[in-house]
Image 1 (cartoon, rainbow, N blue to C red):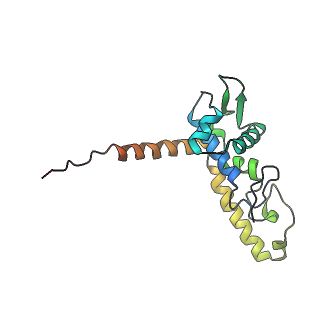
Image 2 (image 1 turned 90 degrees about the horizontal axis):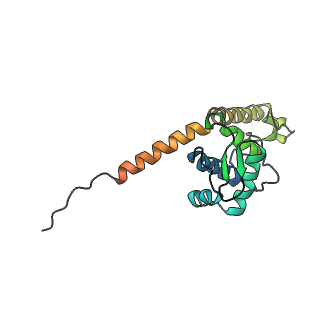
Image 3 (image 1 turned 180 degrees about the vertical axis):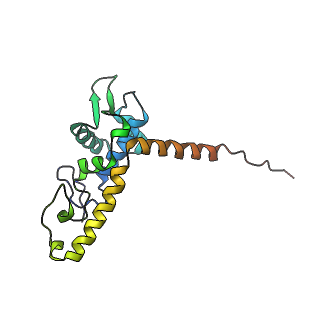
Length: 169
C-alpha cells in the first residue's frame, strides 16, 4: 500500500503520490502567473488542494530550488528558474524519491530488494524504470504550460461555438 507521507519519500512512484500530483499542479498554477507572485490561495482555488498539504509541498519545492517565496501582502510564490529548466522528473523525485517501481533498479536511490533474486524480473523492472524516467526527464514545465494553454483554448472554442437557432412553432 502506498502512503501519502511527505516526511518519508515513497520509493515506489510508478503510481505517484498525491503530494507529487499536488506539486505538479502547484508549479502549473505558479507558472501560469509568469513574473507575478502567485498567492497560496490562488493555487488552492485553482486546483482544490488542501491548504495544509499545499504548505508542505511548497516548502519542499522551495528547498529544492524550484520555487521562491516572498512574505507579505505583495508576496507569494514564483518559479525559481525558467519553466524550460524545470524537469518534471525532478519534481517527482523531490517529493517521492526514486522513479523506479522497486528500489533495486533505481540508479539514484538504490537499495537491495527481493526482486534481485530474479535476473529476468530485475531486468523487466529496470526497463519500466527507464521508460518512466525517459518520459519524465524529457517533459518540462514549459511544455506542460503550453499544453495547458492549448487545452484551455480548445475548451473556450467549444464553449463559444454558436448553437443553431431553433424555431418555435
